[in-house]
Length: 489
Ligand code: NDP
Image (cartoon, rainbow, N blue to C red; front, side, top):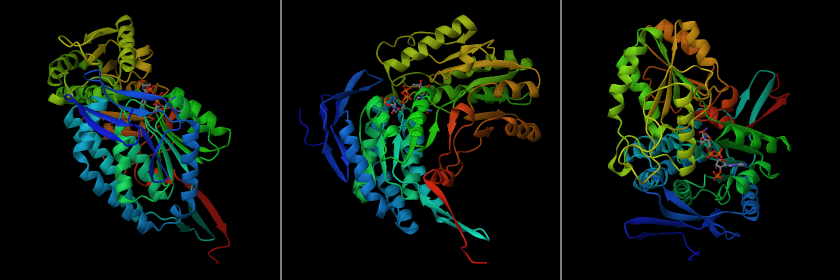
C-alpha cells in the first residue's frame, strides 16, 4: 500500500481517493497506526477511497502542535485574521468543482444540492466570519470596568457526515476568527471534504499548528478529543447519545463544550396558509439531503379542517422530488450508509404499526437495487406521543399531526425533548409572529424567509448547548475576562 503521498487515481471509472495521512503542525504525516478504513459511495455501494484511522499518539501530536501554535495565533491582530478568512474563502472558491464532486461521491448528495447547499454553506461561513469580525469587539469599556474577550485556548472539533463542509467550516471559521488553534476529526464515512479544506488551509498558509486534521473513529479520536487535557474547548455536532459522552468527558476537567444534537422540528401550517405551498415546504424538508438534516421539519402540524386537502397536496407534490442517482441530479439521493438505511427502515416499520402510511413505506424505491435509497415516506393520523413523532429519524420521513386551535398547535410543537428549529407557514402576520415567538426552538423560520449566515444557529433543550454561525459562533471560542479599575473613572 502506497502510504507516502495522498493520492487520487482513477480505477476504471471510479475516482479513488486514498488519503492515508493526517495533517499535523503544517505537514501531512504518516499515521502511527495501521488501521485503514474504506470509504463507500452510498449511491453505488462501491469503494471510493481510503483513510487511516488515527491513534491517541497521533492525537497527542496534533494537540501539542496546536498548543505550540496558541501563543502566536491567539495574538494575531483582528485585521490579520480577517485577511486569513478572506484568503480561505477565495481559495475555497477555487476548489469549487472538487468540493461539489467530492460531496456528491461521499455523501450521495445530488450535484445541485452539493453545489447550492453544501459548497455554498462552507463558503458563506468563511466569508461571514470575516464580515462578523469587522465589527466584533474584543474589548468593551463598560463604565467602571473593562470586559476583555480572550481566546478560549485549543479547540477540538468533532463533526458528523450529513453536512461535510457546513459543520466543519462553521466551527473552523469561528475558531480562526477568535484565534483558536484546532484539531478536527471529521466523520469516517465522509472524510474527503475535510481533506480539501485542509489543502485550502495549507495553500493559503494558515500558521503551522493552527489547523490539525486527525482522521479516525469516534471511539478513539472523538473520545480522545473530548477527554484530552490539552484541549480547552470541544465543539461537537452529532447524536444526543454521543453528545452526552462528550459532555461527560469534558466535565472531568470542566472544559466548555458546544453541542449541536439534532431535532424533531415542527412545521406549523396555519389555517390561512396556501395548502399546496405548505405541502411543498413539508416535502422539501424530507427531500433535501434525503432528510438527513438536523433542523429538518419532521412533524407537520395541520389544522384538522385542512387534513384532507393537505394529504392530497402532499401526494400531488411528492412526485416532483424523484429519488435517484445523484449524478443525474434527481432531487433525492441515497442515505449515507447501510447503517443509516437500516435505522430509517426500522422507523418506517414502527410508523406502519403506529400510524397510517400515506405514501412511501419500507424497502428501496421501485426498480432500485444498488445504493442506500429509501422511499420518501409520509405518515398521517400521527399522535405527537408516538415514537415516529418523538425520535429523530434522519431520513426522508415525515409525520402529519392535526390540531384544532393555534394554542394547541403551539403546545404540540413544543411537546418534544428537542428545540433546534421551528417553521410556521401562513398569511396573517400577527399569528405568524405569535407562533414563532412561542416556539421553544433556537431558530424559527416564517414562510420562505431567506438563509442568513449572520444569524445564530443552535438549540434549546436536548438539541444542544451554544450557538454557531456569525458573531455568536465566534463568542463560543472566547473566554470573558473582567478588569476592574480600568478604565479609571
Ligand atoms: P454520531 O453522533 O455517532 O457521530 C457524529 C460524530 O461523532 C462522528 O464524527 C463520530 O465519529 C463521532 N463519534 C462517535 N462516537 C464518539 C465518541 N464516543 N466520542 C466522540 N465522538 C464520537 O452520529 P451517527 O453518525 O452515528 O448518526 C446517528 C444519529 O445521530 C443519526 O441518525 C441522527 O439522528 C443523529 N445525527 C445528528 C446530526 C446533527 O446534525 N445534529 C448529525 C449526524 C447524526 P465516526 O462516525 O467517524 O466514528
